[in-house]
Length: 214
Image (spheres, rainbow, N blue to C red):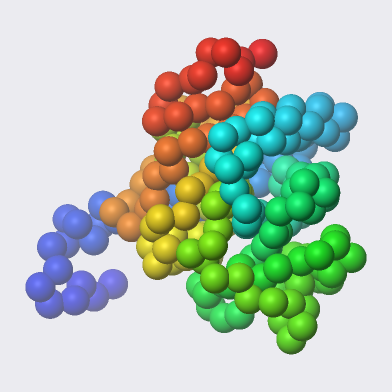
């Protein structure tokens, strides 16, 4: 492999090794997610949802941005329904290009149809655009994460780009405890999230809120 002029070879090699480590861990965690007992996963998802709904961020937000969980991800449909029931403006991601997503409003889960990579999305022609400055809470998915806020995503870079462009949106990352890791390999462009929720509790900057632990 040729190294661009002006690049430090050791820096390039280091980042390549981290990239490979992330790919390996991603494959490992995706397989683990598929093997989780469905009943146990459903219990974990319900606990995570309960904790998420109890947060100050959720209760203060007029507009909530949340991913739509796929088969191996946390089931966010009940959370989205509750947010709609609570009278909040609910927005979900719409992928409009490579590494580009927008927040689009939904009024019902029936507004969602299979879209990019089969992920349920709102109609790109009829769903209202939600200005990111209005978002009071963003609920972030991950393949795995650390309690320190480190995140392993699917590798598309959508959330990295979104939060680099809109750094003032309050985020909460959610993950089943079985899919957390003690250490996530990270690179300079990777983001850390201040608040993590698993079924074991709410973690803020690596410290667990003991009052919310099981």
